[in-house]
Structure formats: C-alpha cells, structure tokens
Image (tube, rainbow, N blue to C red; front, side, top):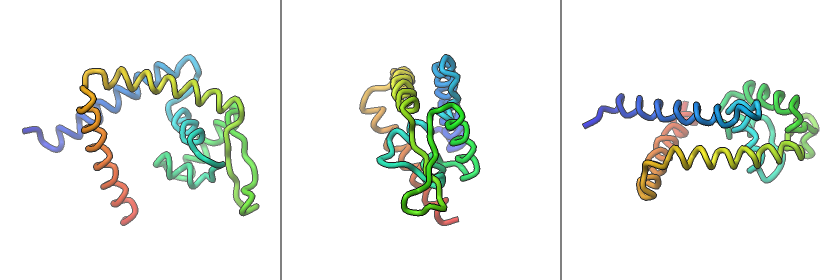
Length: 146
C-alpha cells in the first residue's frame, strides 16, 4: 500500500507536469499561468471583484493579488475603478481584450486538461475530482481555523 507521503509526492509531480504543459501552451501569448488563472477567475465572476476576493479565489496573499492585478492592468486585460458600494475600495474587471484573452485561455485549459486526464476513464476522473475536492476542503477548514 502506498504511503501518504508517496501519494502527496505523486500529486505534486502531476501538478508540476500540468503546470509545465500549461506554461508551454500559454507561451505564445506571453501569459504566465498565474495571470491566466486570475483572468479565468475574473471571467467567471458575476461582477467586478475586490482584491481581497481575487486573493481568496486564487488562494494567494492579498499583496500577491495586487501584483497580479497590476500586471493584468499593464497588459490592458483589466481595468480598475472605485467600488460603487465603498468609494475607498477598488474593484477590478476584465476589459474587452481581457475577455478575449480569457476565452483563448479557456480553450487552452480545456485542451491541456483533456490531455492530462486522457489515461483515465470518466469514472476515474470523477473519483479523482471527488478526492482532490475533499483534500482541498480539509485545507480550507484548516486555513479558516488557524
């Protein structure tokens, strides 16, 4: 039987492999995976997001989310504006170019994910999803407790 440590090592190795494939697929767009993830989150948002919400969605520190947003603003993919409900706060939202880039990234993500999961049967993908979601939920509980 595999040890917990071996299993976690395998999760890390698979994650690194997927990131490597994503980096390669995103290279023609000069788009680091971290910025691509942020564009995806912003594209899926139903309204402009505060930095704290972006940080939470990306599971990164607020300062890092500000850095990511700044890079997206510099590239013309995101616009900042005052939060209508609190003029002291700032929200960010995709520009037209950002929406187009997010659409291109979604196609890339779909392609990479299909290739990564190709060795698995659909029921195995579903089980893997269930198990990884369970691990992540446990981490979320730890983060909120500590």
